[in-house]
Length: 349
Image (cartoon, rainbow, N blue to C red; front, side, top):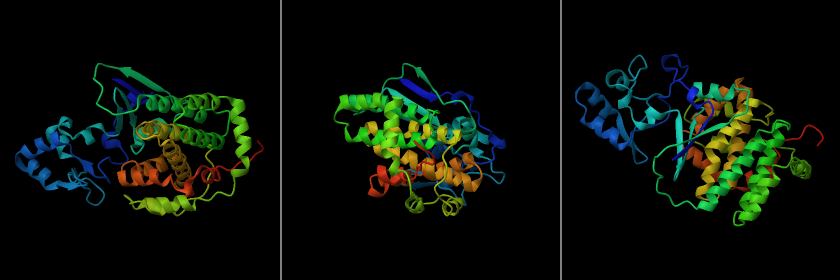
């Protein structure tokens, strides 16, 4: 198995009692079958409490938050499973958080979710461009029905997307505009592998990029966040803060290194999902909308990392919300030309 992780992955250490937030809420905590079996056989008061807190939601066994927190927490906000049984007794969800892993046959990627304060700090407060580490072990590939050619194309095209986003010679708004154009062209031509490979090369050429920016310049104005605000308000809020901060959404500058890092984060987490269905546009558009939303939230909240954490909690930890975001990208309201309006050009190209 080949595994890829961000370059700061092994710097991460849980802050435990010093953490300003808790990873025990407000989302449902899924309990895997093996852990459930252990919990069901556990004797004594702790076993009774665990079983009283277990419920079924969306066909999965889980702990459902009560007043925004895991029902297992004691009066001091501590987890009795850890204090009495040790961390090895935790479910997969609790043990791995904030690590999110996606597996594609013999290829896996793991990211630290920015809903975690320490993970967000490591990513969003760094200045140097994000890179990735690759490791290989003897873990056998997982069974899959992926199209090998499509997977390789999506994987290679993401490298071009990474280069576009990390090209600090251009304003961030230009980089996002090029990213949208690149993804749009790719998805339209996925059945032509040779043309897609040419597009990957073309979008790494500075002169070609410049011609594309000149061509779409007239489209990049008069944007409004109304449609994005409506989309976000259609989601199931997990916190009271999210609907409130959405009221202030407006087109905001994306010229920040933190937003570059966040764009890389979303591309790393989402782009390869197109290898399962070819929906490259969904991943790119969802990435750009997410970055624009966090940029605006950050202006209101006075902090990009805090805005990113709140957004991640609401979207990445709620599968219905994440699904709604991706599917909405197929609507004309979120077409390439509509999204380009949000990346206004304040200078002459």
